[in-house]
Length: 303
Image (cartoon, rainbow, N blue to C red; front, top):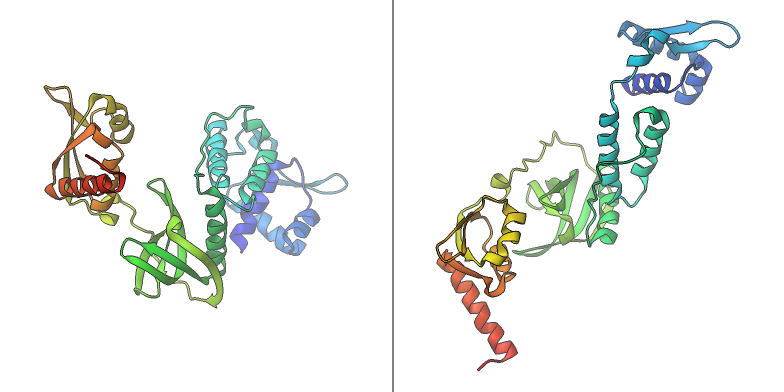
């Protein structure tokens, strides 16, 4: 595409003092006449480009433009590289690492020797996530149907989707696409997907909306939790909800009032506190914990 080539030419000029039209033509696999038209288009767009004829000549950005020839500051570059490193932490291809090298090569004067922002998006499931993400990205790029086996609270099923987005949200990875089974857009959690496969079946790209990822819409919160936590659990409450999430009671325990969307996940979370929490509401959660405690006593024995 012409716009991609124009951006590529501008990037080359910003990184090199001088380049010739034949060099640009060879690099972008177009004719010299096309390069000349592109240079004219960049000049009309306000880029101060100059051309020198003869031996040692070529195309360059005017000297007076040198100090302002990049729109990126050192901080901008650090943020871009931090973002690329975060993606490379879950990439199985090394593509983002190669992209970082390209950016660093042309912008060494903007990059300090020390990285101040480090982001690692990998998890305990990195070895299984990277191949999935790579397969999904290929399917999105090639416009191929994606097949996989899915494990959900409602049961297990085989799914086929038109993939459109790879999403990182709520500390987990998802794929968003048009589900051929449900005839609607769906969000699938990668850790629940197995046997992920890019098929050879193509699809016509829909005008897919950007997924609405607000927690309230994806997971409607209709469960109100009221629970009293022992004081030595304060660090966990602060870590998950912030320092203002609880009220200290007369007996020193910490009252937490929060809304939730999933009773099963809430029950499992409560169990991680053991005897350090007392649930006040909802009654259903109290019953769940009581029944589980009785079942565990049967398993482990009790007097």
